[in-house]
Image (cartoon, rainbow over all chains, first blue to last red; front, side, top):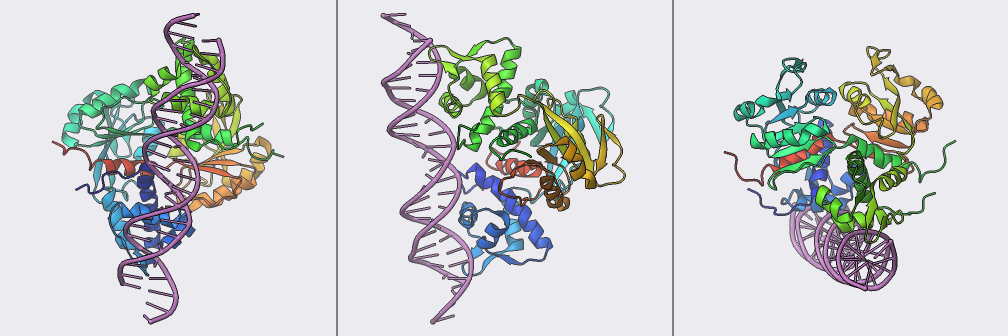
Length: 213
Length: 213
DNA sequence: TAGATTGTTAATCGATTAACAATC
DNA sequence: TAGATTGTTAATCGATTAACAATC
């Protein structure tokens, strides 16, 4: 099923960008686009766009361009967001709650199937139509749900432990918000989102600019 | 003040990772590390680590290694997180609230100086010791605060407008959580954090794995 | 057909890694 | 001094971009 052996990570990230852009175009009833249109509107080089797509086959018509809704459907299929995916969230603090209620999850075919926490004060509480479950029941619960995607919104000191549990429960990819480098088996894919790291990089860029008033 | 003309973005991102790791080491009273230690514990190649530092000067002693607390202090200074920085947050929804109360902001020397929203129901409410202000007062308020960092947690359709206002108010770097590509003057630096994009990339990786049970 | 735009190959660019002389 | 580890140069690797024949 996986005809492309080595797709660069930046290509995958851009694919998600294209998809978002195509959804907007589709909503605006645009039917056809060219790679040059994409460059104008997203800033991503036209050759880059064509190259990115080329990892997965042929998508356009020379002299014409790309059919928006067809391209959208095909990229969605490549990213496996053409059918609903169950996702579990561990850590129901502020961030966890925000993610559970994040707008757009549904459209992207992600379904938060369960939320866990270890804090007795949070367990049992309702969070966006979801009862927060005891973290220790993660394995048991996921045996039913079968989620292969987990989102970790726990503190750094709990993250490794929770990751281990999630992996044991069948999770194969992890979106990690905890500021720690997780040690996981090679088959498991982890992506880290670090709010403070992003701010730090931005902070660096304050220096090179012209002095403020 | 900016002796290094062209530091690669990946280097800056890793710098923030090193810093976090060094803070941990310091807390564990480790005094000295070698680049090989860094590789073992973070997975980042030892040569990469040394190369990254080399953009900013000399930090270690041949045959000995790096002094943890000194290195920590110097990286913090490079990233300008050695002194408190005011930050404004626009959009006080779930995500905005989560970020305002995010643990670690203080340690990283970021201070959320004001939060804004355009929803009358949110304006005036208390959010982590902060009164949510009317978005339309952003310019006026930031004239006093002088924040050069803004975090955007508004919906996609409001993001460009808010970004324009923030830039007009003196903001020079933006952390954008809205799923949209902002058009900004060249001098302004934007970093995008896209939760759904991260999930999409992870979702892709589910295919290449061994079949589930 | 002529004009436009694709998919792909080749050229360029930049980042990572290995190797090693310098040095503590 | 001998052993360890740095900072940096050179080699490798991979990603981006330009160019163009194929084709609608």
